[in-house]
Length: 318
Image 1 (cartoon, rainbow, N blue to C red):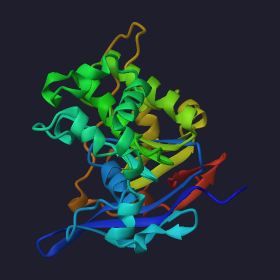
Image 2 (cartoon, rainbow, N blue to C red):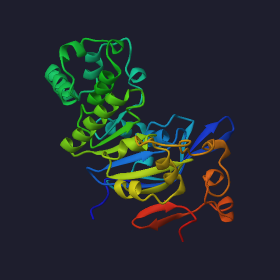
Image 3 (cartoon, rainbow, N blue to C red):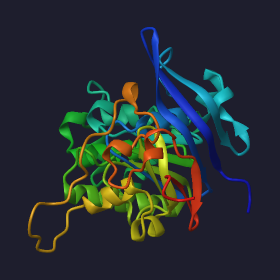
């Protein structure tokens, strides 16, 4: 197999708060080939967005710190980049769609100004044609009206499509979509997911799709990584993970998905809450909520194990 397009090796990220430091991402390992889509799922606060910011070199200065591990892009360790080298990668090589389009767009500038700012210098002379092309890519009709509008004059779905067009302006090789459907209704969510899938296939770019809704990634991602308390607890082919989940946390997430079939009795839920990064329990971080916990789960943090072609962090598997 060829060298991975992107490889995250044993990545650990700490946040500083005053004189204290606590882990937000712990020992994460991910491998992504060119053209693949990775779905990254987990409850709020598990470290998904922190990992995305690290992949973009956007961790907050003096607060977010990579303390261990590597982010390898085509064999080069990006954790050693300075600000200037990151600037050459963002937009052209890596691009990101943030979860709240309203706060991501500047409210005092029209869309044409903001979209034009994303174009490479050699396309500034033909910016009108290029902006129309980008809006057509994301299936936005009436480009003249869209470009002449302020963000508040557009619907949530239109604003999200504008953000996607901005991310595609320089034909990136990797697109990171950080919960891009959170603020949208169900119908528009489905439209955005189908749009991203179509664009990913058309441009053959790698994509990381981050969501807390495991149902959204079923038809979108090739690989599925499940994150809990800063760790990847299970990762493998999406179809394998969804059909036969191995980690008790993944099993709990799938049981809690709503079903259209008639149901009697209380709906299944995943009891308890994920821990705060400042108070991660010893041993396996999931053990206080796990129905299958054993004595060693309270003491020893499980290492990654290869189980039926996927990686799982759980003491259930030798």
